[in-house]
Length: 143
Length: 143
DNA sequence: CTAGGAGTTCAAGTCGACTCGAAGTCAACG
DNA sequence: CGTTGACTTCGAGTCGACTTGAACTCCTAG
Image (cartoon, rainbow over all chains, first blue to last red):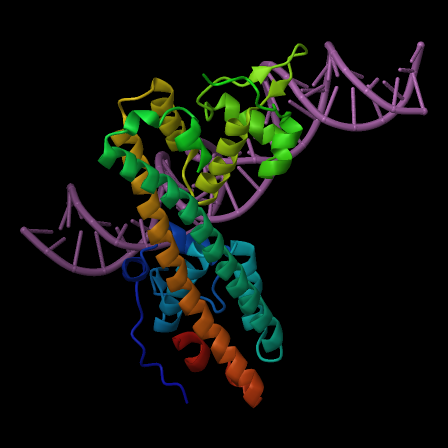
């Protein structure tokens, strides 16, 4: 049913689309981050399907949101095993989603702290009282 | 003017307040992350002022938001040098603030991608059509 | 007086995720 | 035919931020 009409992509093309260096794409492959095998041409060079290229892009998101390679690998293993373990895959995704949500919250908290300090400097610099900002002194340290 | 009435804290107490292991507190000190010297008692043990403890807590926020130790060090050096470089300190903080804001945005983008995948699983599992979720196939891979 | 627990210093090890380098292959161009 | 330049494999190196460990000191409670 699925006709073989997809354009196949070289590692360079996938690299461009994903922003991942070719070295990293090979590294990911060897770490088992692709469910199916990546085809090769006669000369042994990698040929990626569109799906695989897309998955690589998803991987960049998983990674940039802090999913460790072994966990991506675990997910991919489930996919490789075929239907029947969707709940487990779902659990991995949902858990990671929650972890990322927490990360966002934590970052925003840190952002608030930093912003408070930024504001103190802004005001002091505007008021010309910046020299009161000293050491871990009263103004600077306490907020 | 500043009377010496502050209660001084042991490394253990600071560790509790900040969540940083004592090892890490010593490590930070040796990396120059404190503007002033940390006092010692007769037995050579560290005594932190409230200000220093507070700064340690700020450090946890700077770190958790990805400010590298060398950059914190740079900021602290400016503080150590005393008044006159507030603009430079301000620049460091403001830049980091922006970096964190970008981080938040990126994370939220990743979160969106992940959430899309989560939703696909939710729906498929609810509809009992989960076995259509296969490999990098049409349903799973494309979104 | 001794045992426990917190503290000290300094050096070395760990961890994850790349990142780089060497040595070689291959297709196309001038 | 020679030289780019993108590709291949394999193994080793890097980086930042801890983290661990060994060997030691000190105070307090029993």
